[in-house]
Image (cartoon, rainbow over all chains, first blue to last red; front, side, top):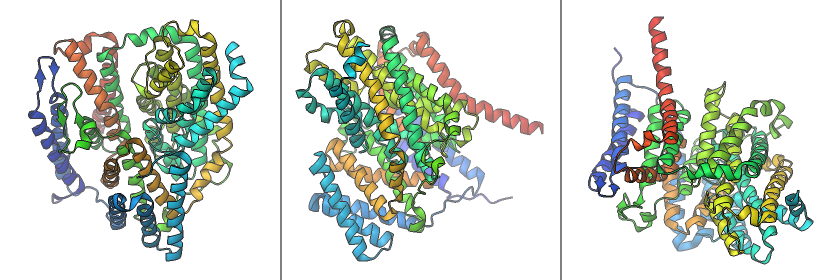
Length: 146
Length: 493
């Protein structure tokens, strides 16, 4: 008999959603379910929270019963997370250095690190993109940048 | 004829052209959909005569809708909420090297549906307006439920995951201040969340940023999208047009009818149209992988909704959507009173508007169809330039909606969520569907229960809502029947 395996993607994502469902139900229970004027703030969240709890439990159970199931290919995910982290840092830096500088730095990172282009090319692309955004949005279209 | 005489005046033709161009350019920016575009450009019209101004605004409206589709297809960046569905098959077609064909289908579907919308406005505006008045909270709830039932058709491989994604969308829609009791819900103590999470933030995060992150996984050189080669991929083929003939009709009619309902909006029209098209298709398993009908139906619905939304505005003075609310403001500013007497008292303006919408539609096709191969060349842009540009456009688009860095931070968070959903095989479209419909659905349900003093049977005893809820239930149960049937056949073997 094929050994049952815990820890697949469906198992963990199901657990995470079950936790979210639990949070929703607990919060909704603290609000009015039904008031004198009709359903309260807790009415709708309670119902979809219960539905989410049931379906996430079904997902967890089905992943356990299925056994190993399909594996998620996490190769290359490191590069995606690296870009995401760089994006998060540059957005956080907008308040200090503004969009143009922050975005130029992000673009430089993408070109130089993710695409492994030479530094002068990365610098040129970063300056061109940031400059282009500045010209197009605040100057031509009157749309403010962060 | 009077209307065409007004609309075909050289000055008005020029304003229509200007409107179409401006609308397309601004509509390409995510977050700046038709309502924001028209609101931004409204001050330009104060120095014009009302007929010319309305004509230009009609051009802007169509242009903005088409601009939103362009980024959906080429970059997987939805320009506005109604363009999200176009991302599903439009971007998939682009990934197959058929971006030009997708853009062409979008332009043609928009033209056909826009024409149907204008004809509908001309011919059936007053009687349809009476039907729209029959819609109350229970009917709106049933319509939203019907829209949510479409999740079945957006499910992909796992119905369970699609339903869970939809429920997460409902939760996101509930974040903010409860409109009935002013209770703050799921705000985690952040003041910025009191007004809820904007749809644009979620959609761009899940689709655009998620796609960019996913594209970073492999070797960089392999990740650029194929540039369309050959006429077959630069423009739609005759086979594409033949495959889309029902989709053109479906999108046109459904979009117009749903657009007539105040508050229903082009988003629900595009989702329902897509769902219906997939349901009746001979190749439903191909939807989401790049089929022309998957672009034609929602794009058609998106555009014919324009004509439908003008029905309650011009006949009852009730704006049917955000854009028509801005148009109402414009009409009032110019001294007009949209309502039951508008058409008879301002026939020149009304028919001039109808004619200009038709001309704007033609201009959109004439302007954009030849530009399709040019737009498709955007894909020649090297990945190391294109992907940072997409990130920049996404950030600016989100910031332009609310002016809040908090929303940009949320965008980044939803980008990570979009990436993880791809890795774990959770479809994003049901989440977006839940987010778009959740707020309206809750409001309609609570209003219905207030009307009936808490009695749920109000939803079943009103004929229109009963019929729509029955359809919704049928749509939800059909996959179950199919599965039971398949098991039964397997057991017999």
